[in-house]
Image (tube, one colour):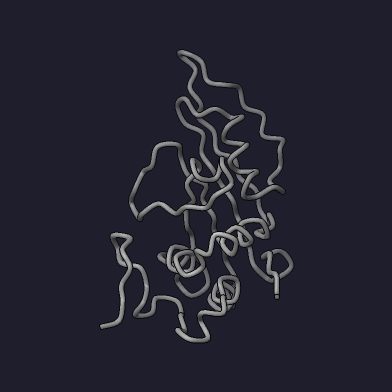
Length: 167
């Protein structure tokens, strides 16, 4: 099976997360590293205290997507991932978010668009000339031999997160 990771595949990868208010840097780091273990650990931030809230953004470029993609395959959420990862797809760039609360236990979950979940998010921006083909390949599974899928097709997830099916 082909294993993609985004690095050395002509993609620009940006991983970001914001620490705000009472966000614990240790717990945020644990969540990010569970999904992106190559994320740099040199993000030194103090634990928030009364009167001194967190207010910092951590970001890193060209971080491997290998663990993230493996989790999508392991949990068999490839079609959901394709839909969630391409909500803001413009042909060469996409941005999507992952729930940090799920990430801290090694799981992948996508918030609904415009949702501001408790626990914060990890933002992922991907950019590249053939990004659509890469996203479809990265989320491919054998079921697509029977029911083909493509970006923003008739089987895509609805705005409310519910499945849309053929009639």
